[in-house]
Image (cartoon, rainbow, N blue to C red; front, side, top):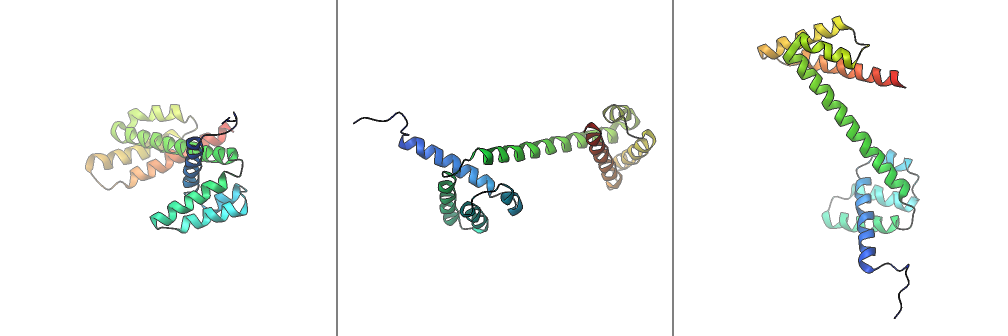
Length: 169
């Protein structure tokens, strides 16, 4: 018996289908509007929307198998690129959020000493407003009061970050 070089082994087909199921599972986490942006075939879009509504474990597993089979009939590269772009966007937003939190915490702990660090990161920031917010947050931090000023400081830092991103473009 002769095998063609193009023929894929049974385990290779299973791996490919498992990858498509995993991609389909990621797609189930996206909003209906995000899925519609992908311009998927109607049957696949319908299967994904239905899969989002299914909560029973075995039924969901069967639906993922169906989604994987439907995805085998399309070019999945644009879908992979979309998922990777969304994951990268999420990771970037999370990293930026943690950076802002760290700046806020340094301002709370060190007060005016950390203002120069923030001004280096955001040169367009207004020093007096930043110092005022940092002092209020530090006062709350040292006295153990509720964190209203710290939240305001965080929002201000977030706005500064968004402004700096807009200035870059």
